[in-house]
Length: 351
Image 1 (cartoon, rainbow, N blue to C red):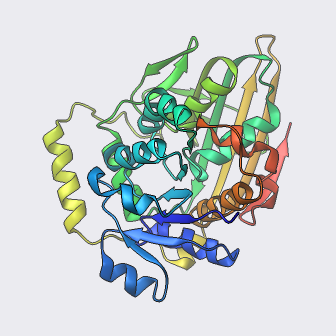
Image 2: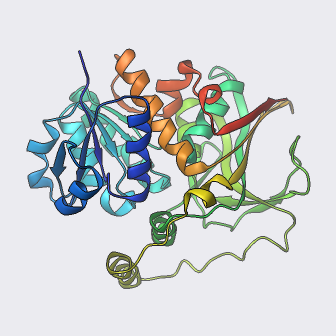
């Protein structure tokens, strides 16, 4: 049976890329967004649905027209709750591109019982952050082994963030962030924890500063793990930014939202995205002092995210999972060997 796919947020920067990659793989999909005129201009001749993710009372009828729901509407901390709840209530397969740790934790803690009850499958963060990290760790770690620490380390050249990414990053400071300590998720401000690090295959990057990506929430679910966190890599402590001020009011947040909604959004061009480069390492340490490492390097993170979504849809169409509830990307897709199939990934090293 053909599974009907809907892309919500199709007119956004990453939403449009997702549609292009679905099209490239000859996957049928419906586009959905708030602006009917923009949908018509961007997707002429395509099936379109007008939908407002903030109006829960008007979600039921549109969502009855899909089996796989792709949510590309961020920030998820702000606008993700109604749509993921509606998907869980209706027993849909739901994918998103969320890089926001607090929203992912909410889904695992609060949405999972509803999704299990209604046989829905919810998979957060099917994007460069943090699906690649989750799949990497699945390559080197055994769920039956005790780990002292599993941490990830990111470095970017020419990142060229989209307007939506910048907006999500600004709003993230108003929501809790976590690292794993003594098997518990502990609140921590971004950049507040820093340390020296040596990573095989990376030179001149010796300083790591904590940033809250969702994979640490996944690792707590997937492994027998004591500690874990995600980090940005810098040359030294002098190049790492200072700890940001998190004592900000909700009124400040509303000003940021209003400014974003009425303002022009600068997005990277195709040429700028093609110049993007990344290195992502994961290191797993056992209590006995043995370390395992995997390093992935590649380019063009926005197209990588869109390609990941397309390949997730292809996998789900061929092998619909019998499991339900809120699941991590690796729990659903580790068997599919996606990393080696992604054209944006140039090299994978394990040691």
